[in-house]
View 1: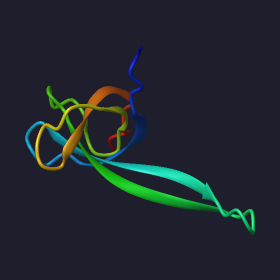
View 2: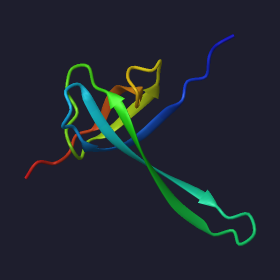
View 3: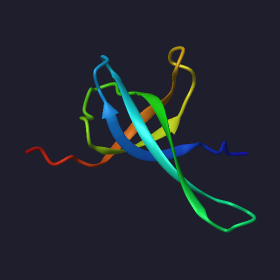
View 4: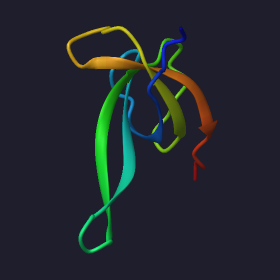
Length: 85
């Protein structure tokens, strides 16, 4: 039986740590009574082995074994590079 992996897409908001990035993931939730959609966001700390992600990049992260106290995700790919002015 194949394990289901938790995969998320979000925006890099910080890359200050060595081999670490902080990713902001936005989701929408619908209120069951009023049927109104509300936007929620959560920050995840992910492992970036080669330090390729920069602030503003759209990245895909996947759940993995605990790497540290707060890092439980790792970078899979950079979906879209940020435009540098």
